[in-house]
Image 1 (cartoon, one colour):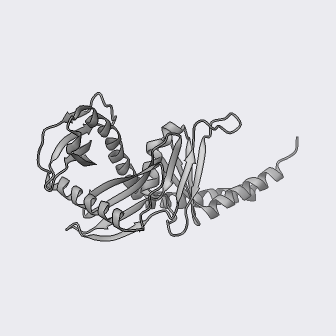
Image 2: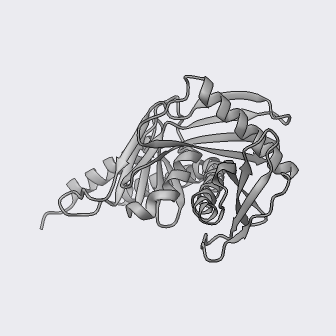
Image 3: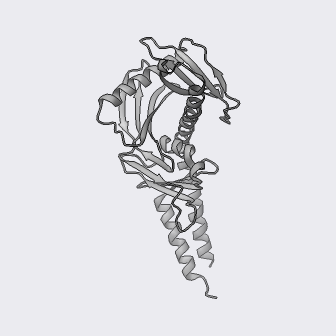
Length: 285
């Protein structure tokens, strides 16, 4: 009995230390995913508010969102050769539409906004010209320009046009240099992964946990786009957990706390084997 306890303790300790290292390695991905989420939330609610209040619909070319001093801003720009900002909707971290600041004064882009607009425009042109980028029925491609330090990126996510489905995959990342020149473009997931919720409950029970797998090309960790998608839809789907399984790791996302834990597949198999062995050795009542 003493030897079994020691072996369990050693296994548990090694797993805890290994998990901490993996969690630390995944921390920048989590941070970036939450930044994408803030941008998309501003776009979701900002678009509704802007369209409700702005009368000259023919003058709207597009929009993008970003965070600034704790606020999430959705900026709309005009349809012209030299576009200007025609509206800015700003949210605090509650995204309460009743507390949103609505500014419909026309103005020039700030230098930061000018760069966001530039890389978004390039990304849109690439999508329209390159067969790498795929479009599916009943979906939209959502562009999220992101400038953080020396990094300039545009993430492209696939969003559903119908309720009751969460879409992972068919997402892309374009990276740029400081002069907004496109350096690289890649597909993050090699396929589209719809997961349905609502209306179809398994044996009368709400599904609490879901999972999707990563091919080696996607990588061993959950992606920033996965995290953004989960945070956008997890409350609607009423999920408690979502797991992303790769060759090496199991990424366990807590949909209630928005926290990630990563464990190796090998460690998880050892835990399961140890649990099975303890169940076999358990005295029969």
